[in-house]
Image (cartoon, rainbow, N blue to C red; front, side, top):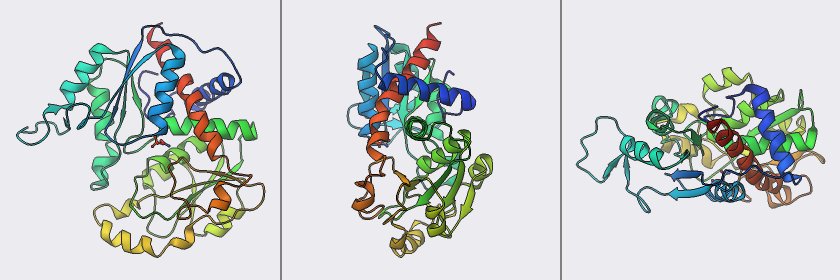
Length: 322
Ligand code: CP
């Protein structure tokens, strides 16, 4: 694996190798050390968990992390190829990435979907530009399409809870939210859980479809019957996302979304695990009683972000030093 795009790079075995190593590290295994290695993480969008877990994982492995926020702690980046740069963006992404990759061993980037043009988001333009212009491995810290670092932590949680995941029923449910959100996390849940052999159902209101290419690739089942999908699952993952067909008509979607508060996860059958990537809008997406209840695995997953980040860095830095 040179670049981490969606966590499927090594197939099911590659995914499980990261997960098993993360669980070993959580259980007290000694991390590999990469003294003198450097990682630069570029955040074009905010983060609490991803940034902190990555920097903490670097510290545990002897790697020096450098986090940059273009537009505040570094120059705002022009992303368009061939742009006439006479406006507010002083540096082109190709110059920034080639420069950074001369200084560090690994580059990482977070850049969410623009949610304006579906075909552009499908190209994952910022992550693709980083991969194109970097001379060192690139880690995706959540792009327009995927969030593999979250996917590894989800997978580690599921593996630690169920062991063999083959055929375990997982429901990914759409949830209400005051804003239109990208689909990187639900795409990742669908891909990761399918790769693990789980029986995945996606429940969403009409009009809030995931990208049909991703539905076809992952083979997930789709339903508009949330009640049935929650009742039949052993684990429920909640997330809001903007409908694939809603690109370019957000005001229409906002009107529809405002009438969908009944999709909040208010109750689950006893023993059904609950997961959410965080941050979460409490009592909009999910009731306090569910997320704070005995079957909530949300904090375990968030904590696993540290151990999975360490396992990913071991893999990437170990491979680049062979
Ligand atoms: N789940 C997640 O990626 O959290 P942050 O956006 O805070 O990094």
